[in-house]
Image 1 (cartoon, one colour):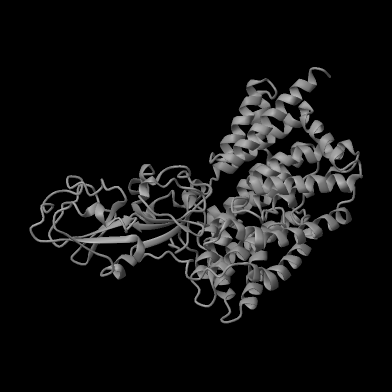
Image 2 (image 1 turned 90 degrees about the horizontal axis):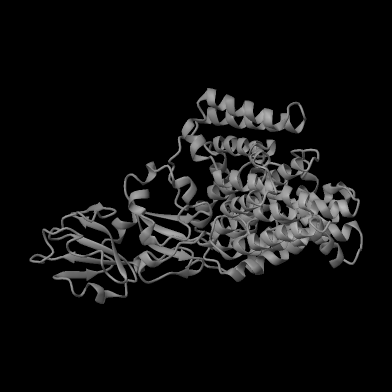
Length: 582
């Protein structure tokens, strides 16, 4: 026992450090979880074979199959058609009601990020209502809809992986619906009748003011810069401005190569802090103006949101190499309601940043777009399925899910058969497998499974569980479950939902064993609690997606999210013991 306590203490210390790094650094959670698992491996707490076994967990492989199959459904016009049906002119409540009715079933079966991306552009660019009144409700509806099924969110599948690793029976597809459907009903009422009253009307600020970001200068006859390259003229060496584009006789060159030869009459388009005109005063015979060619420039601009999976996170714009990676230049950056000014190259990118890109012809051909950006002005770069193909794909997908739900086949088997059929039909190709690999989720889940095993086997989770039970003063199983639920809710506001579920599961399992109660209600409390990410932009990826396009402030999430969290928690804690007895 003396030896077990120091081991448990060491494990707890590593978990605390992991939590601090998750909440205070920009490092991707997958790397941090993998690092913590590697520390336990080096300490001899988990053998190599046992550690590697976690990455072929049936629930993890099922998660990968779900994501790949759902990617085929994303090629159908289903989400696009429903997004166009949502808007109702001059009736904000009816629009929000339609939004919920469209989002709930889609997010219950498809990837939430893809669903929100489909609705993002139509809602942001609508002419009837301020986008800020619709976008955060869009995210909330997707989160709640994902709680209805096992495959509705990766969080539920991660919890199922932890359940199976602990030796419990696998969760069923619609086992979440008994609480998830009442949550949808309560969420529908709140989103439709209350949410828009608590959100700002950021109509004017919701769209980037593109004129203010440009500074144009015409190269006049006799200029010393004529006949020399961009690099030789040092047009890229300004303090607050960056040369992004060049207009030559109504033809747009974007992005501008450093080797481009300057000619008389060229219009140089600088971006950044356009008030710093003095930065180009030293150049010979450049005439500055601001609005003459804005119409032409708008045809080549694309608005994107930086994804939480992007490899650009934490990098400065000038070191991210946008030209080589994407054939694009960053024109402007918005972070929530703030328009960042100054030299664009020095801005360090964060998840949820809205970028205005000047893109070249090769932008749509780059394979890394899927993981780095959510397109606000969507480019249809994937091969879309025809109506007949779409109907067959949706039918096969529904059949596979139904076969798993009715236990005609294990879900893993039905999804594997489905993916095989999609390959035979030509709906799914090798490039899709590569583009939708989601290696970050695989690494995170596999590492989380290993960490959970170490926490349970070392006694660390039991030690923490005793502290949880002490905090509720021995009030019984319901109080212990509520304590686990609120602990998970707190974690998911501070770190990602998947990380919160992975950290809270071993505590829930050990608390149930200590109370000699069924672990199932405690496990479900973790699943629902990890999805209750309503209070911050960073708790859930869809919250981040709408942060910039809605021009939200941090407090907007608190104002609109706190009442929803209270309603969500009351429904969850009241119904869990009824459907999942202790």
